[in-house]
Length: 94
View 1 (tube, rainbow, N blue to C red):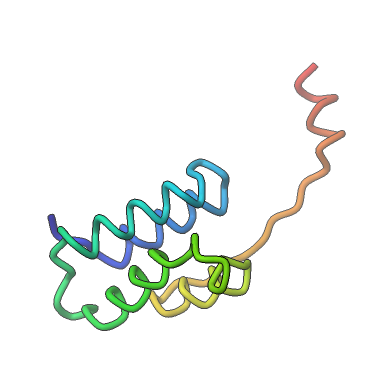
View 2 (view 1 turned 120 degrees about the vertical axis):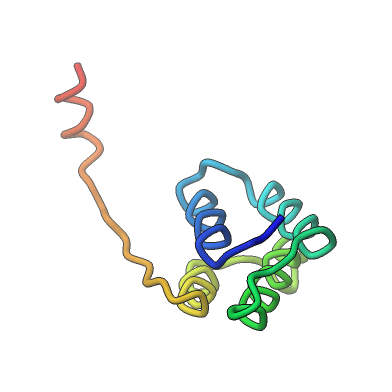
């Protein structure tokens, strides 16, 4: 399985959007380190980022917003936060 920077960025994004848990992100990263074939022209960044994701369950490493922002930037992506009014959304949905 060939892993690209887009694949890794998508996993980080899934984690930030609470679509996967931190443990699922860690498990994915650990599996990718053992089984994946990283895209050659991004090899160093991909291996660094995925190996760091694999340590996110270790208390000393953790995973902060700043960590995610930095890892995404290593992959050529920029993270942005969008804040919406949850109460306004509830009124629209009712």
